[in-house]
Image 1 (cartoon, helix red, strand yellow):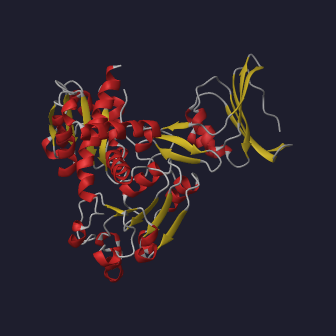
Image 2 (spheres, chains in turn brown, blue):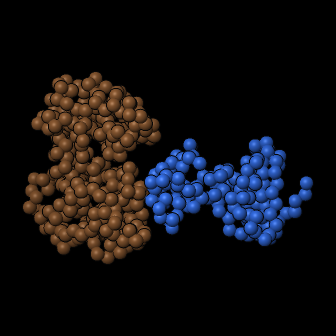
Image 3 (cartoon, helix red, strand yellow):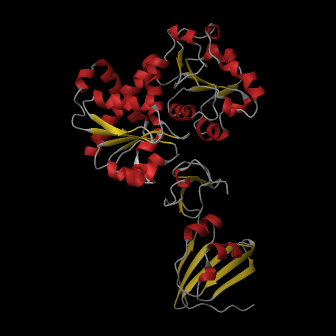
Length: 306
Length: 139
């Protein structure tokens, strides 16, 4: 049974195919209005995530399917101590496909090993969130017209940000990618990501603490939130937090066709004034998330039939 | 020093000198009813010194554990005093319930029934990662 646990479970060709289907859905949504008629998606959210859950549910509804599930562990049998394996074995009897979010890393993998229907990882702790990465890739492809020959900047918390690690892994399989890492010393990209992903795939990268310095080179800028709780002392946080807030004046030297992305939710790391800038793509990302999930649900259901 | 040859059993040879007691403990050889001989600091033309364990019975042993602790060890299976199989044990591709994931955020930390499974992701550097959370095992 094919599931999606890690973005690298999909080949580059499969990702390209999903992006092509998503683009076709955007062009002609009516064509897909009954693509999953009589099919049911179970959203098993062991921790709350309104945006991701609604995106999956909207995706299934727009494909003509139905949804069932729960949005927090307290309203599931996990609260009674049921294992993930038993939960998905039971849910496999009710649904045709499962989207699971769980606070424990690897829980969706356990689910995929035990379910008799496809499982989509909708986020497992700080580990993987492959549909966010698919969303990011679709956004870059739609806005830039390609996933090759791009200089992509990542700014903010590059140490703990799973969306950053996952997108870097996915982009490392395309050609001509350059990566620019902008973060305070305390939140630099972990060395294992640099070694196992960037260096292993010969991806050129630079590390800097200054966003303004590298801004003119960027084709895409992926912002993340610098979180107070990541710092050991308040002084460091206060010293650094404003360096990584994107404001209109910091975009003065940026390319005219730059795209600004963010996995959301944002707090203050992108000033609201930037929302009006035509280069802001973060709300388009949200919409793209629904379309790529539609493409993914269709693909996994199709493969489950075979 | 005279150690009797065995009729039916296993000889674990080419153990890195000093590792025999560790393997004896990890393989729970003390629980066996048969004779078990630990021979330490034997002269070896390849490595200078080595340890050997002789088990005087054909018992199941965890080869993955041996390969993980001391890759390069040789397993000799003896039947009717004859060597019927000789295998060099390398680092296993996968380890099940040999080492435990220490990541407190891993699903294995809350679901006690799950086997602790690790996959070899870098043979040269002996890197094993948990199959669930992908955390590297640091010993």
